[in-house]
Structure formats: C-alpha cells, structure tokens
Image (tube, rainbow, N blue to C red):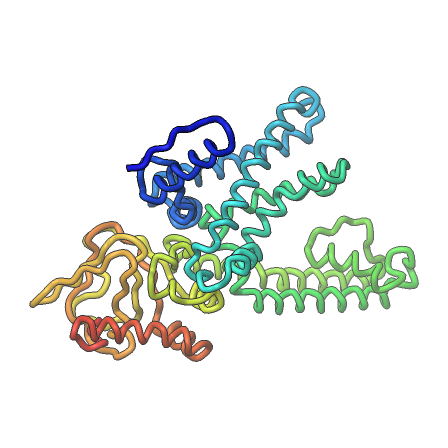
Length: 423
C-alpha cells in the first residue's frame, strides 16, 4: 500500500487531494460522498408524500401551519397603531424569519419537483417549471414576493403588503375543508358561470327599467343606466342603502319586483355551492392529492396531463380494520387503490393481501362478475375509489388513461394465472 508524506507546497496539497479522492472512490474513510438524490427523495417524502404517515412530515406540516397562523395574527395586530409602535421591531423580525422559512420551503418544493412521478419523464427544468405553475406554488411565490420587491426597489410598497394575506391560502394545502371548497368551485364553475350570467341579466334589466321610470325625475341618481346599476345591485342583493330610492308609484313597484328577483337569482349560486360541498364531503373522507396518487405505481405511470384527468374522479375513504369492502360473491361498482394500509381477499381456497400501491376490483367492475372472495381491511386503510361510470367517462374522454388501467389489470391477471375479472 502506497504512502504519501504531506509536505508544504503545491506538491503536498496535490498529494493529499489525490489520496482523499482515491479513498472516497474506494468507499474508504475519506471524505463522505453525499447522495443528493437520496436527500432530495427524503425531502420530497417529508414535504409532499408524508401527509401524516411520517413523523418528520407531521412535524413539518404542523410547523408551517403554526407559522402561517402566526403571520396572519401579526398582520392583523400590526394594523393597530399602539401595537405597531410598541412591537414594531418584533413584527419586522417575524416577517423576516417567516420569509426566510417560506423561501426555503418554496425552493425545496421546486428542487424536489423531479421526484414527482408524473413529472419524472420531463427534463429537470421543465418538471420544475410545470410544478411552479401549479396554483399552490404560485400562492407560495406571491406570499414572499412583496418582501423581496420592497428590498430590491427600496420602497415601502404598502399595496403589495396586502399579498401577505395570501399566506392564509397556503393553509388549503393542509386543510381538507378549504381544499374541498376550492374543488367544488372548480367542478361547479359552469353552473356558477350560468348563475353569474343570470345575475348580470337581472342587473341590466333592473337598471334599464329604473332609468326609464325615474331618470327624468332624479337625473342625479338614475340619469343613466350605469348610475341606475348601483341602485339595482344594492336592491338585488337586498342591501338597500337608501341613498337612491324611487319616488313614483311605478318606480316603487319596479323596486319590489327587483328585490323579489334578487332573492331568486342570488339563491342559485348559494344552492349550487352548498349542494356541491355536501356531496363532496359525503364522498370523501380525506383529500386526494398528487402525493397520494404517486403512491400507486399504476397511477404514477401517468404523465401530468393524464394524472390531472384522473384526480377529480377519485373518491377517498378512511376505513378502520376488519371492514368488508367488497363482499364475497358481490358485484363491484368500482375499483379500489390502496393508498395506505392493507386489504385481504379471503377466498375459500386461498388468501391474498393487497398492500400500499396495489389495486383490486377492476376486473369485477368491468366484467360485472361476482367477486371471488371477500375483500376485508386488515388495518386502518386509505382507499381511493374509482366508480364504473367515472371510469367509462374517463375512457370516452381519454382512452389512453383508461387503457393504462386495463393493461395493468391484464398484467396482474396473467401474473396470478387468474382471469382479469377476478383481479
């Protein structure tokens, strides 16, 4: 074994570096090699995948939520002159600390974007750009942007400080209720757009009628349709400030009709949102996220566009142990993905266990055959459920995605030497 005596000068430095490199390459006691990919994967598991199943992930989530709530409280307290004068320095210190933490969080989410299964096929820069364009990441960026803009431009941008309130929407990542509400607004956007169009029509009709009825008598309040629109909006919403009121009997009658139409029109979006929210809550026990989908290998094979097609169709359920998911001999109207826990298929001749990442029921769902055995949860489980009608809707809109699931079912059937309908 060779030996090198370290002497002052360039030769000694080169010799030392060569020795350390050789020992590191041999896996010896030289400088430890940092596995950046393993670190990146672990960071991804903590900030994205864990979601309560990992202790480090629970600590991270709780810390971020606590910091967000503290920021919101500090923003409100800072608007009180007495508190701002007394604790202004502490408010500034909290703001700097929060921006530092949120910046690290944002950078970590971009850094780990290449670990997202749906983006794994893309180049690293494109994966991070796609991930940064998501609504959550845009909110994260806007939440820290005012601080850096104010520092770079050396201005007190008070208007941009309002963007600090966007940190409240960061909670939607950790709040199932807020996440569900946003999903309802997105899924019911067409119905809400129709209700909004109806409201605009009622507003225009009410303002136009009042313009012709009261325009000559009160030109300062109803002299044009835009002026009358202010009265129409306050009347349709039944607020009625009283600063613009009709004087003629016909104008008062028109006001009564406007108020009645306002009650009917404004009830539509409220009913749409409340009904959609109730249905969504009944169908879901927890929020389905990309992180949960990435635990299922067959879903992780999808690209980002395909995953976006499947995500809204999945229904989520938390089930305790010893719950029968599909009875023996029963017909299944859905297929199930195991996001966590394990499910056992109890048949007369054998038993089979489905663990995290597995799926079952697709063959019986598609073929309409009775289940070969009862599927029972062995532990507390998180199951993602895809109904038959949603699968066929997906197959009509995007045959390639449905084809992936069919092929996976066929592969599983061949691997177990069983018909696909029994998978």
